Image 1 (cartoon, rainbow, N blue to C red):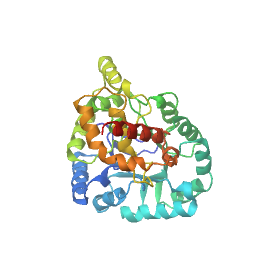
Image 2 (cartoon, one colour):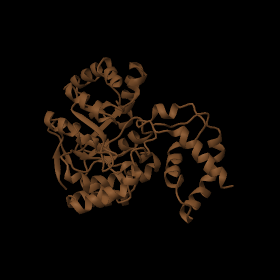
Image 3 (tube, rainbow, N blue to C red):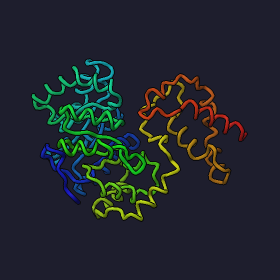
Image 4 (cartoon, helix red, strand yellow):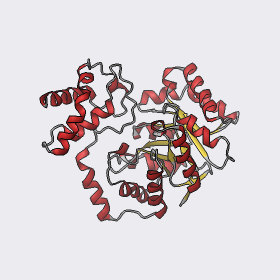
Length: 341
């Protein structure tokens, strides 16, 4: 597989990285198997966040006892909650990884200009001090808004940026990717498969081989999907114009307001499984009734009591990086399910 250099850091990794956000879905024993298989294949870049439940611990179980021939990235969203919370979560990452040095550490979900302003103050000063102590090698920043990420890179303070980019979300091509490459900032691609909604996964991954980006980090939680993704990137076959057109046609109906299943909206105080609301809404609402839609609605009826508890508090909208209209969709899905009784 192609080896790339992460910006001007000089760090070399394989083109395919391992996104650990889905490791909480599987047991520790199964996670061990998947991670060891990734290492066997030569994958040496592992990305996670303290927000991803027990993913740091699961990575630490496998990586902490190995020779340091891998690169690990993590980040915290607790900078939004004050410096005490940020410092506490930062220290917890070291404990969970069972490591005394993290390659890239930084700020999670810096989406709006005011977020960036907050990060540039005491949180950044703290990270620079930790870098000077040798506890982290490089400072990273992640976010879902390519305009904010571009402005962050212009400050010269960040050595890696991670952002969503896929055949549906091409906005990083406007300025962000060019700015990163021009400034020597490493790029890591999140949501390469649109949070799992793009069905033609192999073609969707090959999309990135047509663009000047760094490491691709899909979330993976099984050996099967790991090996399938590895095979695609290892073959290193960019899309033809005909294949790109086919892929664009496939995703055209998704629009931009689709759920990426990042679960930043969770937990809901009424225990509504919000990502499932969006998934069922996308599959069923406004669609012609057929066996597949009817079957999905039948399975979804068990959600109805929870949906009726929604008081439209709007916290889910505020926490969503894409400000998806969750309360409206809950209401629409509730009405659709009630009509099927």
